[in-house]
Amino acid sequence: TLRMAQIVSLLLRVAGADRKTACLDWGGGNGLFCRMMRDQGYDFFSYDKYAEPFYSAGFTLDEAAAAEFSVVTTFEVFEHLLRPRSELGAILAFRPLLWIFSTQIFENQGADWGYLAPENGRHVFFYSEKALQAFGQAHGYRFLRGRHLHMFLRERSNPYLASPGALGIARRILAGGKLAGLSTSLHYMLRQHRAHLFWQSDSSLLKRRAGYETPYFDPP
Image 1 (spheres, helix red, strand yellow):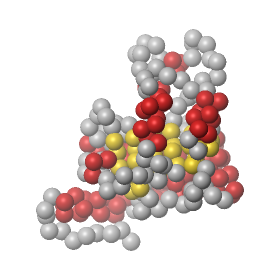
Image 2: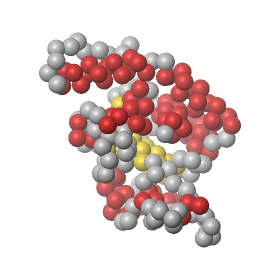
Image 3: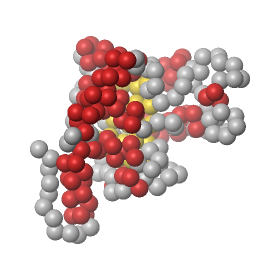
Image 4: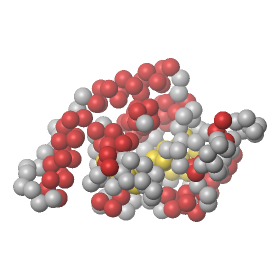
């Protein structure tokens, strides 16, 4: 989760996302990634059909004012979908401009491919690079392949990663490597020193929702 947060935080910074950018972690489990991203200063909400997001209590999809999200993240989700066409289509209904996700690309690996994980039976669908490109193109997205994470980038009316320079940096971050790893880690640590301010802001918001008289706190 920490590695995902480090990569996504810098990707969003490069893309031009800010504190007002509506973000959704779909399939977010216990909500830890959502909480970590809120502590980074991004307006994340969490949703999971099967788990209670207790780390992000008060900041779930039900509490979000937005019906659409500029940024959607889905980690360890794609390979668990029984009906990916319809289930991924449901995520597209949020009309994300950036969709960051994880999965290992199928490249005709054999039966010894560890990602098959037959001992637990939870990985039921696998995707080739060609399939992901075709899915993206069919819905108006460009597919950017990475090492740990990948991205769908909406082609039209998208202010994020609009310049060749920003897009090139995003590609290098997704590709991974020592320099990318160092950059994402350092960026995350530098932003993390203000995490207590964003936590305090969220705490005051939840108290006001509960009816307590508490002043609004907006991090500087």
